[in-house]
Length: 57
Image (cartoon, rainbow, N blue to C red; front, side):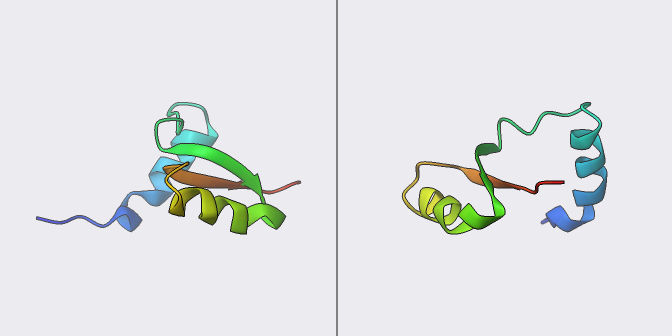
């Protein structure tokens, strides 16, 4: 049986934002919004598993 990540995203993001779950095993690179193409390139070249896009507040 296949499950979609969308069913779990909201709960997982809440846990990550509250510090009860670490995303470090999944996100191996972080970039700002202007560097998104660099993040995709790193994933394409297998230099990153997933790239986390951070936003300045």
